[in-house]
Image (cartoon, rainbow, N blue to C red):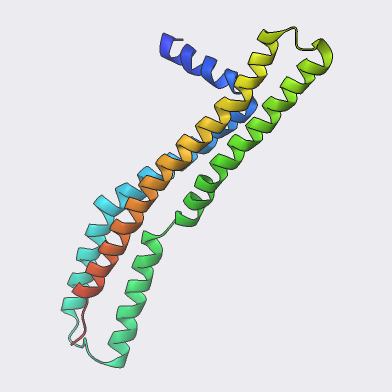
Length: 171
């Protein structure tokens, strides 16, 4: 393996098994975030244009039936726009909790070292402290960066939905 991959593996090993779980959650989280951003910037505008064309082709845009059709189209568009958002929120909330789990498991390791060898082995204690702090830091960094991206995604989604709603006005 190349040097950066070895460094990444050493970092992940320093945090114990919890850090590997955080890595897995991070990969899923950022895959979903990138997919949602791609959908918002590339796919959703095409779907909006298609809906607007269909709406403009309708001869009747003011009857009760037309309003129901419009509302159904807007509802489908909103559902597609908000797809995976609850899962993204759960994954963001999960990251700090996994970090806390890493803290607890690392402190258990420190206490095991203390109970077996006393305080005479600082190197073994340092490994436990590292195993306790690294997952916490990683979980917080992932959660904070995910929250920033999610906030931007939410704002852009609301704006895109409002624009679509305005374009499909009834007469």
